[in-house]
Length: 153
Ligand code: DQA
Image (tube, rainbow, N blue to C red; front, side):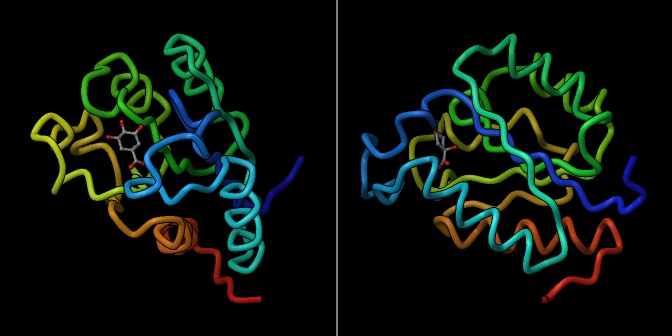
């Protein structure tokens, strides 16, 4: 049992297992493992404990969100393309009822119109988009503040 309230679940959705094979102009060419290693370091520096999850199955993503309140105190969510149409995932995040930030590597608002829509509107503390991997550090800092964790180690 921890009483620290510093655990952040970092969720990646569909197509993040092959991140290194996706358009490097949009996503930077790094692998999910490399991205998670950066996140792990930034989380540690902020006094947070990151736990990671990725799936290509929408139902598994929903079921993880059902469990997430038992596993973590906050959530950092990059649901990939599901962001733009999966009301089921939006509903599940609402039920989870945790401080959450929506994150995208690319700038979803300056790409195709369909990427501007988000099922997380109104459910998250902020939407971080277009800042590449560094955006995750900014998002973690937002969650650290929301959890009352004063980081910088
Ligand atoms: C993404 C943006 C989404 O539009 C896209 O479908 C992804 C990745 C991003 O991190 O920039 O899979 O979430």
